[in-house]
Length: 274
Ligand code: ADP
Image 1 (tube, rainbow, N blue to C red):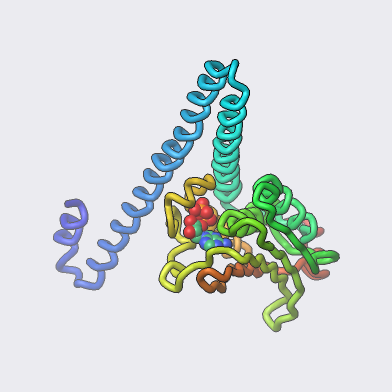
Image 2 (cartoon, rainbow, N blue to C red):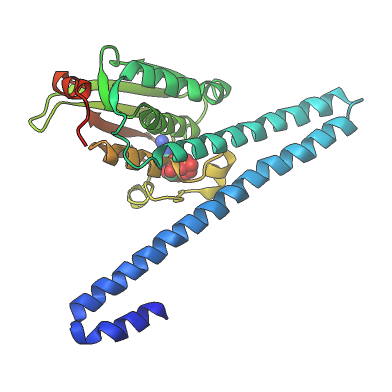
């Protein structure tokens, strides 16, 4: 209704302007819809594990004279708690990312620290699935950026690699420095031997809330926000995230970020001029 009213008002000004205005309105509505969806989605996702935990704890109390049942319920409680943890982690990441200017408190960040933190974040899940994690090349490399956001980005990639891989496979994290005319940068590649992603889905996985298989994603605590966060962090650092994948063979997500070099370090030490 509103869009139509606007187009009627400005119609005499020419159809191109009308089109622009209508597109603007649609975009504003779309963003608002995404925001509403986000709140509804996350609250809904949080309710499920909380409800399950409450029921399970009652079941444990009722089954206090049946050790086998207690063990079974406790196991399920652990799964629900993991889901809850990963949802909360995603909310934390999201709040880190909503910071307006991520580069305001940019600093040289050691890649081996980011890698260690990412591995730590899914140690529990990887252990349960007997997934081997191997990291290499990160020693002595430093990227230039916001530490919290970079940790969120790499953490999400490694978490996905573990989530979308079968048991007893390998997840590799390889970092290297690339000298390029536009500026030196760091590439961090996260490779898994998991389910892979079809060409059709590859185009959409970086969108907010997009999940190839919602049921599977939910079972691992996924909300479909992870890769949107990664893409946002990469872009706001002047970098990029790309994906290579073959179905049922695995995927490699590569994060390209600016390298912290001498020039950047020097400008960092000068007082900021505003
Ligand atoms: P989610 O919270 O669902 O993991 P993401 O935004 O992190 O959300 O990922 C979006 C979708 O992309 C996932 O639901 C999954 O279908 C697919 N995906 C992401 N990473 C991988 C991977 N390493 N292997 C296979 N599929 C993946």
